[in-house]
Image 1 (tube, rainbow, N blue to C red):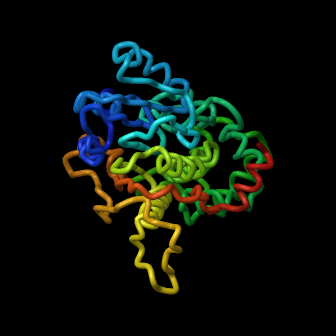
Image 2 (spheres, rainbow, N blue to C red):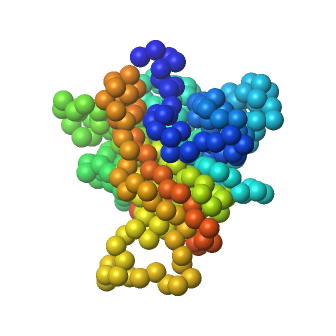
Length: 329
C-alpha cells in the first residue's frame, strides 16, 4: 500500500451522502485527523466546515488548509466531547479511533510495527500506556483487556505483565508486544498479532475513548438543527454498539411497549429519525485497497425539532480498570 493510500478516509463517499451536504450549510468534522472528510465536504458543496481534533500533530497538519480555505474552514484543538457551538449546524461527522497518521508515527507508541516508547496519548499529555501497564493491578489489567480488548486470554496476559514488570518496567512497544505474544503461546497461525487487542484496550483507556464518544454524541445532538445529520464511522464493536444504542433509543426505534423497552415518557419526544437501521460497511473494492476499512461501520440519523435528551452516560464496561485509572489520574 502506498503511503498516500494509508491515509485514505474510510467510507468517504458513504459518509458524504449521509451528511446530505448543501450549499450554504455549516458542518462539523469532529475528528479532523488528516483532513480527508473536511476537504471532501468543501469540494462537494459551497459550505463552511468547523473541524476539531485533540491531537496537536493533527492541528499542525491542518495549518495549510486553515490558510488556503480561510472563511470556509476553521480548525480547533480540543476534544469533541467539549463541542459547544453558538449556532446550530447542518451536520456532524465522526471518524472514530486512532488515525493512520498516529499509527504511522512510530514515536507516538500506538503501534508495535516499530520500536518506540509505550505512549498512545492522543494529546501528548497525562498518563501513558506505560503507566497503565506498570501501575494497574493484575485484576484491573485482566478486566481491561477482556472488556475493552474483548480478548479471552486476558488473565494470562495480565499475569505475564505483572510477572515481567516485577523484574523491570515495561516501556517499549516491541518488547511489550513480544511479552503478550509469548504469554498466549505465540501467534499460532492467527491472522492478527496476539497483542493487537491489548494495544487497543490500552489506547482506549488512556484516551478515555468511550467516555469521549458518549460526551461527543450528546454534544452533537445539542448542536444539530432540525433536519441536520449525525454521521458516525466506528471501527470497534464497543463504539458501534454505543452509537447504535444512542440513535435507536433517541429515535424510539427499539420496539417500545415491552418489559425490556417500556414506553417513552411524554416529555421524551424522539430527537432523531432513523432512516436506516443497519450499519453501512465498506465494499470489497475499498477493503482491497484500504484494509483498515474491514472493521468500519457507518451509522447516521436525522435530527428532529424535539429538545435534546439528557447527557449520555458512558457504560462502565471495565469497572476495576476504570476505577484504578481514575485514581492514578
